[in-house]
Length: 162
Ligand SMILES: [Zn+2]
Image (cartoon, rainbow, N blue to C red; front, side, top):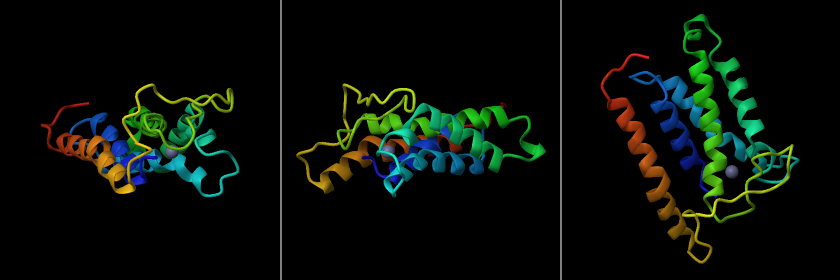
């Protein structure tokens, strides 16, 4: 599986690019959290790993809950819909990244409506024969560093109105 750090970096970058310039740190941080959240099923969640918490339904619910909790105030009213979408995409990015890897089970995108597990035909993440160190290096090159670079660019990009 991609590590939580990589998931967080991708969620952060997505939020950084889906907002007006310059991006709001709070949205980026909450999006990073949404992108990591699906792996709570790793810690004794009473469902199979990469099932419900990795589904579209969960991503939508998590984005709605996070928007409600963290972006309540009137200062967010104009941006709230956009923030909610960014958080939803960040949460979904988790399943997409997992589906690009060869570890564990496929991803249950449509749980609870379908128990079918999916894996993309192209799985650049995870080489079962490689060492753990090799896999971490690969993940850093394919996921983490590009995400950090994109997030950095979003913060550097010239101001653009929403
Ligand atoms: Zn996962």
